[in-house]
Image (cartoon, rainbow, N blue to C red; front, side):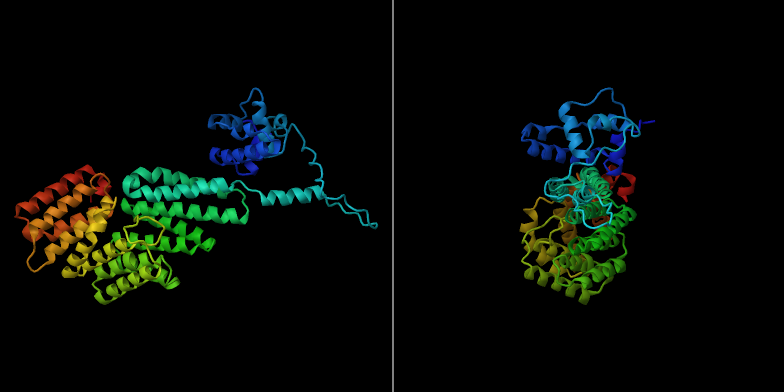
Amino acid sequence: MPRNTLLRQLLEERHLTTYPAFEAQFARAARNLAEEAGDPRLASVAVSSRQFDRWMSGELKQLPRPDTCRVLEELLGRAARDLFASASAYPPTAPEPLPANVPPSPQVGPTAHDDDPTEIVAQARQLACGNVDQTTLSFLASRIEVITERYEKDGPDGLWGQTKSLRSMGHTLLAGQQPPSARRELFRITARAGGLLGYMAVNTGAFPLAEAYCAEALELSRTIGDLDTEMWACGTQSFAAYYAGRYDEADARAAAAVDRAPTHPQAIRLLVNGRARALGKLGDRNQAERAIGRALELSDRHDVAPGLTSCISFLPYGRARTLANALTARVALQDTGHVLRDAENLDDLVEKSDSAWSRSLVRLDVATAMLQQRAPDVEHAMSLGQQAITLASPLPISSVRQRSRDLYERAAPWRSRPAVREYGEQLRIWGRQLPPAEAG
């Protein structure tokens, strides 16, 4: 059993029992002490995770180094010798001396006040402090940006662990205390980390997990009134329903979110990725075209980026990504001429992007449209399908897998042709390389 030291007791009271949470506050105390003492060297004092674990278990034969003790005393307000003793060995230390700017209690009248001015000031200071500072918040927010920027290069498998650790740290810190502004930012970061995990779960076909993470993102974002993250999470719920084949639900979820804020930049994604594609699958041409038109109007109003923004980004959809989603909706509606014209206009923007997935998906959409023509170009369609599989093979995601299988099913009338047989064989080989849950 670990020995219950005063150090352990105080860290438990302050919710600093995990190394990341403790490390952030220890570093903050070190910087404060370095500034107060005029000794920059103290700012670099650090504690290893192994040393922290020994402290928490009470395994200490002698006190840490003097500089480490000074930082601990700054952090916890108790002498180092008390901190590493049994929690019951030392009575609470006397309160700190009254600050110079707080006058002594005036003796007025016979009323006996037992209010302690020092305690009042100390309580106010404690409320104003927290277990996370601006440096930590900036670091966590920067990790969200890195994950969204790298997602289409590293894929869900490459970034799942980092994102899960980021969410876990957010939960740990939220169990402690922060001033309102810091707590709101921590809620936003934690909501977005959960939302990213939800999106990644869709891309790996783990739909129940996606629903759970999106529900968490919605709960946290609504708690702080973060409409941007809330609408993004609603869009990801619609995205999950679409790839699970629940098109009515995908449309309904997106429509409800758009009704919440019809002119918000996030409505662009909800309209074209959520509503238009689902309506295309449902065969509702008029409503699908209306959703596409509204998305393009909002793109002009908000002056969005012209290129292909990251599929997982919290930024508004760029115009090229909006057009690529419109392409998918029109493929479902068998609007072949429109699809081939739009694909030609999109080609330059898509091919210049770093997104192998987007290039793969556009090829699959165009290939499907070529089979929908009055005079189907089967050989060209199968060639595009093979290119799509080659592009996506290193980082397969559920949307590419689904659309590549859909293309093969649509080519069923021409299964005797060599081009279709070759595509089918490539598809089978690719499926054998995937885990059973992803192979389909």
